[in-house]
Image (cartoon, rainbow, N blue to C red; front, side, top):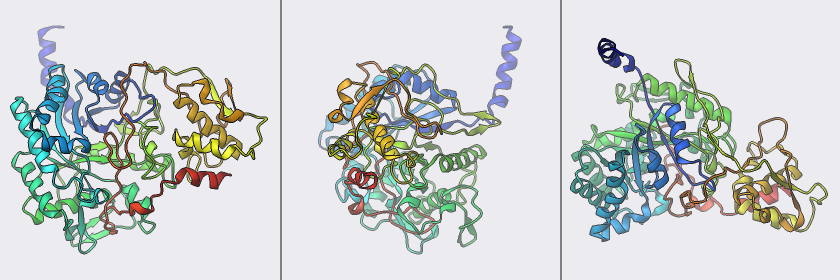
Amino acid sequence: MSILVILAFCLLWPVLTKNVVGFACNWGRVSSQPLPGDIAVKLMKDNGFDKVKLFDADPEALKALANSGIKVMVGIPNVYLEALVDNKEFADDWVAQNVSAYVKDGVDIRYVAVSNEAFLMDFKDRFIHKVLPALKAVKSSLDKAGLGKKVQVTIPINADIYESSNGLPSGADFRANVTDEVLDILKFLNENNAPLAINIYPYLSLYYDSHFPKEYAFFNATADSLVDGNITYTNAFDGNLDTLISALEKHDLGSLSIIVGEVGWPTNGAVDANIANAQRFYQGLVDRINSKKGPPKRPNEIPDVYMFGLLDENSKSILPGNFEPHWGIFNYDGSIKYQLDLDQGKKLVPSEGVKYMKKQWCILDPEANIDDPNMKENWKIACGASTGCTSVGNGSICEGLDNRTKASYAFNSFYQVTNQNKDGCVFNGLAIITDKDPSPPNGTCKFDIALDVEKDVITSPAPSPSITATSRLSEPGPNKSLAMATNQPSSIVTMGMVLGFIIIIF
């Protein structure tokens, strides 16, 4: 290539890339067989994701992100807050091992997210007084490591951190029981030119509040608008952002930078958690990001928006709801759930190079009696060790199956989680292994096959019901206005969901 051609290309490059918009996503790996890191990173790059948020310092994920050109946010789970506060060397060691070492290897780490939704009402006062000291400790360690200018700190918060006196964004303020602590944190972020990350979930508002207007959860809605003075809100995304901004403005923090740390829509597990709604929501979100249009209070400032999430995660807790394993834009294996127009006709593309285990499935023995006295107990075992049953309940993608096929679906989910171990398809003699795909012909309910991953692949731990290190567990905030998210008291989120399935099906 001649020097003139190279020079011409360099001159044209700013013009060619002027309107290019990159996307951001959350990459959780709470799965029985996580998609290999190199495949997941290529999936991101092929679909225009140039920013990613990790919920913890996952070694395989970070190694795969080296020299990828993707900007990374690394999370510090709530379980480490106490150590960060009580042990002066812990923050230094954590930064050395999980930031400095990977930056040296070519990982473009830009943020460290200290804690995850630590002010949730469900946590009560457990973390309230630990977040700011931990934040300061990590910031100090980054500075000492010479990374303070490159890597910023932030904290992800949930919408239940603020409330509104009049049900409108303009009436917003922070919850009275945490106002002092929150303001100290926000002032620290502002002084250090660091952003605040807010998690917004219109779906959860719809799920937990039967009075929440469905159209308001989507973009470009023409109904259920919310009028606040001279501003009309047509969607919950803008309503939430401006509610936060109004609360910040009340305390002279209106210039604080904001990141949308999580926003998404699940595709299975409950009413309204389906492919059509997810596609509609995400297309509106993508169009919004491409337009570079911010909320009414900051119309010329579109924040970084981290979609939740990249992939389905079949080992997640279903405590918040049976939809919880199904937040992925892509299926567990990186295949496409639905299509999106990313911009100028560019479409989503699936993962490449995925390896699967044998084409074999575990099903209910055709000769087994569906009323066998061992059926309920074995169903409970299958559902308790996998998330297969989240796909066969009310409102789920496989809801319409007959009871025999539902039992087969549950058995197969368990079998695949065990890496197709033959002992994972016994169930007191009620099940058999078959090489004939039992998926119904309509194509909407698919019997999965486990990924063939290396035995030494490092996987993220399954989340605890009380503290989530590697995935979203939160419920939305308390205010029932159109502007904000809504909260369902955790006391009625029952642990007996599996038994509920037994009652429904048998």
